[in-house]
Structures are given as structure tokens and as C-alpha cells.
Length: 297
Image: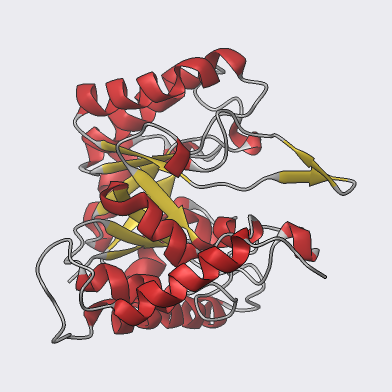
């Protein structure tokens, strides 16, 4: 059974302890710590104490790569990445999630892939580069990330698939998962309702099944592959008016994941085989071909 964790971002802006408590109440297998300005996300001893208190293992660490965390652990991106990996090793997490560099981080962008591979080797953790999305300003595309927002075009060993980011980029998540292949090691479970080209502005992180991405198909596909990576819920619950509403959203997300990952299948053909999912692959292929066709209208 593939483990399903819950990110601290699911309960933002609540304090870190709420993540462990609600993850325990909802029935998750562990948590992902998104390092933020909250010092509780940066302290290995404090995190281990919470992990022990709520019997919730820490599965992964999300490096402080958001604009809001620009000054966390200084301004040197390599230091941030190394400290994230050091924290992961200290708390027993096996993966670190990192975004591609921003375009204006020229030096970091130039050495990014080397730093990622080196950090993974030194600290003994997977450093999984996450798919992002293009930015648009007044209707014009802006190259916000360098070497780009699509890790499948990069020479990296491990990748994170985020459904909401794929949606905003106008990318089919199943096609993206297939393109990542064996380098897909981490999944951020969520959903999205549309792309920037369709007028969508925000990175939604909807509950799975509430958007248009083939979330169920991707999870079923991974289960059929005897995949050994991690799935971590990264859904937006800020509209919840009560704790019970938030807890219900988190439980619904977990139930969705368990249903799609845990269903027994008679079509397994061994590790790495796609023989049991011809329908999924045909649909992914048709979507990819359609996306490549010129618009004749």
C-alpha cells in the first residue's frame, strides 16, 4: 500500500502542531513539512517531539522556495537546499521537494541540477524537482523559472508531480506522469479546474475530484506499477468555517487516495509494466496528440 501523507500547507496558516494533530485524526500515514517562516517547521527537535506525540512520521520536507520564504535560512539557495536535506535526514524523512529556480536567480539556475544531485548524494535523500507553471502578466507569458517549469525537460533523477500546477500549465497529469516515468518519486495530491490560457489565475489546490485533472487515473496507474514513491495531500482548506469542516475535507481527500491506490487489481504485469492499463494510455495518447494539433478554427 502506497503511503499517503498530509502537508502542513493543508492547514495553513495554523501552527505546525495542528498538522500532526489533524493528520492523526484524519488517519493519514504521515506528514510533509513545508519549511516556512514558522520556526516550528525549521527545528528538528521540535518536529521530532510532535512526531512522537501524535505518532505521525515525517515523510518529506518541502524546501523554503516560495516568495514568502525568501529570507528563511538566508538568501543562498544552495544553503536552503542543504539545510532542507539536513533537516530531512535529522527527522527521518526520505524526500525533499524543491521548485525550479526563479529566472532572476541566475547563478542558482546555472548550477541547480548539479546542486540537486550533489545534495541528494551527500545527505542520502531523494531531492524531487516539482513541476510548476508559466506565469502570465497582463495576458503575456513570463518566463518565471529557469531552466524551466517542466522537470521532464531537465536532467534530474527525481520528480514531484503536482496536479494543481499541471492544471494551471494546461498539462494533462497522466501524460505528465508517463513522461516522468521512473523518475516520478513524489506526488502532491490535489486538483485544478483550468489553465491560465482558459482564464484561471490562481493555483487552486482543490480537493481531488473537484477539478478536471485525471487524478484518479494517475493514482490507479501508480498502484498498478507497484510504485514505491509517496503521495502527500496538498489541498487548500482555508474556506473551512470550522475545524470539523476542515477535518472532513482532509478525510475526503484521504478516502479518495486510498480508494484509488488500494483497489486490488488483476491486471498487474510486474513492476514497471503498463500492460494492465491500455485504456489509460490510449486516452493519454489521444490527449497528447490533440494538444499538439494546430487550432484550425
